[in-house]
Amino acid sequence: MAKAEKLEFQTEVSQLLKLMINSVYSEKEVFVRELVSNASDACDKLRYLANTKENVMQDDPDLRVEIEINKKDNRISFIDNGIGMNRKDLINNLGTIARSGTAQFLKELSESKTKDLSLIGQFGVGFYSAFMVSSEISVTTRKAGEKKLWIWKSDGESNFSIEENENLELLKSNRGTKIDISVTKENKEYLDKIRIEQIVRKYSDHISIPIYVIDGSEKKDEKNEAINSASAIWTRQKSKITKEQYKEFYNHVGQMFDEPWMTSHYKAEGKIEYTVLNFIPSSKPFDLYDPARENRLKLYVKKVFITDNCPELIPPYLRFLRGVIDSEDLPLNISREMLQNNPVVAKIRSALVKRTISDLRKKLSSDRESYETFWSNFGPVLKEGIYEDFEKKESILEISLFKQSSSKKLVTLDEYIAEMPKKQSDIYFMTGDDYENIFNNPSLEGYKSRNINVLILDDPVDSFWTSATPQFKEKSFKSVTKGLDDLSKIDGKKKEDKSKDKKSVDPLVVVLKEQLKDKVKDVRISSRLTDSAVCLIGDENAMDPQLEKILQQHNQLNQEMSMKILEINPDHKLIKKLSKMATKKDQITDIKRIALMLYEQSKILDGEKPSDPVNFSKNIVDTIYSSIQ
Ligand code: ADP
Picture 1 (cartoon, rainbow, N blue to C red):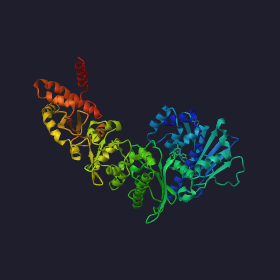
Picture 2 (cartoon, protein in one colour):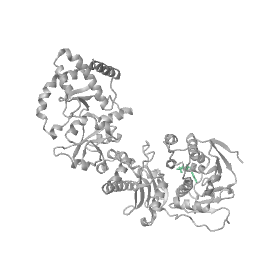
Picture 3 (tube, rainbow, N blue to C red):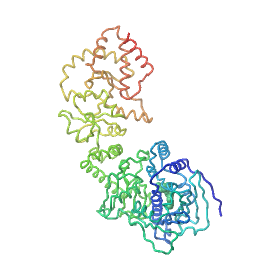
Picture 4 (spheres, protein in one colour):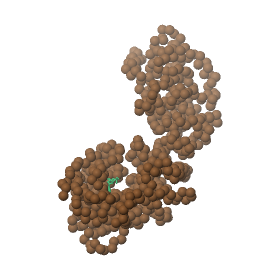
């Protein structure tokens, strides 16, 4: 017999095991759910393989999971006749955690005080949960269609061993996996058949293959009954499925352990037929912003699992959906490659998008409060669709919610438009990275004082879609930090008196233009300012300032940051004083120094660094000094 080979766990696995073993986790029973779930997945994979490879199921066609309890030996075993694993699979699957973002999440989890281990399930680290009740686990397994049988063993410390075993009788079937768990003294309750049956009923009723619980000491030939309903939940009648059953299935299929926020179960009948059982989580999955933006929908064909990796099934901006699509029209032996550019898949995709948006629209009008919770979780993801899905742009905008300057409440665009003053023709917005910073930006003053509402867009994605979206329902989007303001058009009041002030500030404008010529594109008089002396505004045709900043931070800006325009408030006491000084030659040096300071402070208000911090601080100190003389 081959010698056992010793291998180290990947660091993340050791970390996870430590977390799991050392913390007091009240719901240890979930290890049953995790192992049953893995066994069922292994059977799904085998069924898929059987579509393309002959003979893999022939000798043993009835897929099943058995849980065998041996009280005498303190052992509980999970046995399946699914796809099984070879040496390479064992190393890849039971020694590492493949999902990206895991290391970071584990770090956060081990640093957090609450140690909320229910979050762990999200990683697909389910197998390791068995170490919560066990001091040693051994996995005996043989891959379908292969000759060799392997045994993996570990005590949950830093390493595991793998050895080949020639005794093929160790498995009842010619393929599959048997996981033997030595249950520790404190966890003896899991050696009780009734207790295990309860757990299976609680979490695994939706599993579509039969699950048997067997007492190892009883006579083997005794007829057992499956504990679960053993039919795919999405094929069952809606009225026969309880809320709890939906939740269990969602937890299993979505690897999420919260309640589903929305459940959508229907059969589409027409030119193409398929069944959908989809969920939207009530909390944010940890990898929502993973750069891969992969979806988590599982594709089945006539109840046979095909893949959980079909990017064509749903666009990335709906990647928060969890669930199953079961098609009647795709061939069973469809390969993952054939799914690309498949017309049936394309039709399902477009119908799914339509349906999801319409479900969301209904929720928005029927339960606003609940919709706002959804929005805070997934709004930023859904908004990616505004610039990625030209066809659905308008419908996504219709169900989007926005922060605003006139109130803390969220508004839809239709609500915003309904409240616009008669003369306002555009939808005003300002982008940035923080509500308070945007709200307090001087560029908003004129709008606030005239009771003109401005949308406050503080998600990074906002800069992208606003740059690619000129209009909504014939109303143009207009950034308040770009171009000339048209406030006087909306209330023509102040126009007259301004012209007098304008003249008196002309000499100041000349000095400022000269002094700041390397820093700003222009200096001009503003009507958008009421309280502040100056603000920086982008050129009409420039890129959105926030977008420019984001691109620069990610080194994706192929050009210099564009120069802004300095707008000054002629009614401000400082500007008035400076205007007088500008007519006197001997005070020009002072104005020049102040001009620089004004420029730098307006940069700070825009969330940027001063261009010359050293000189800026020196100037401040000098100014303070002279003010207290
Ligand atoms: P997850 O199931 O979420 O991927 P686990 O840690 O529970 O995470 O399992 C890791 C991997 O080990 C699985 O993805 C699967 O490839 C493999 N695996 C676990 N249990 C079995 C089993 N009973 N049969 C075949 N493969 C299995």
